[in-house]
Length: 263
Image (cartoon, rainbow, N blue to C red; front, side):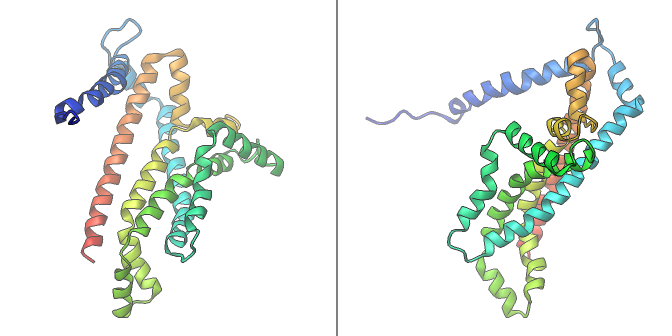
């Protein structure tokens, strides 16, 4: 008996239902609240209030700066780690990769509590709030940077390294002319997976920054407890920032991939 065949339109129905109820409907609710007042009348007051309040603008800029610092530090640690793992001749390198990815399987709150106890033991908890916040975010998002980099570097054709050596390229030249350009898709994916959540992960800033480091995610959480309209507007603005960042990252990856293909 032959298995039933379904058309593409039929197979898309579950995805369309999920998209409707869990993406479009919540977005419509946020949009309605963002552009209405307490009496549910259409209003631009929330938009004007956000961009006329220096505290809110500073929080957005501050969140972007923290996310950038976190992403740069994470990339500087993850790239050599992924490169060594991907290029090494160790037979059990997949086991080593697993050691870096394993923290992702542990509950997020437990991991942050462990870091909190470590910082408390060192004597930094409650004093170095900004350092603690960035340290916690780097620790939390490091596996998300290592994994795409490792996968991308591992897929680079070995013959390209041999061709570079035949043409007189040393290890340093080969690294910057072959490895780095061809690993740009992994870099772009890692940046996206680290930068975007770093702007909103207020749990880390609350638990490790002694609630003295306020990022835009904390703003949203606070306003949704008192004013859904302003909270929705901040969430909508954050969504625009996220889309813009993802668009830049996607264009960056595409350009660098094309450049690598022309090497």
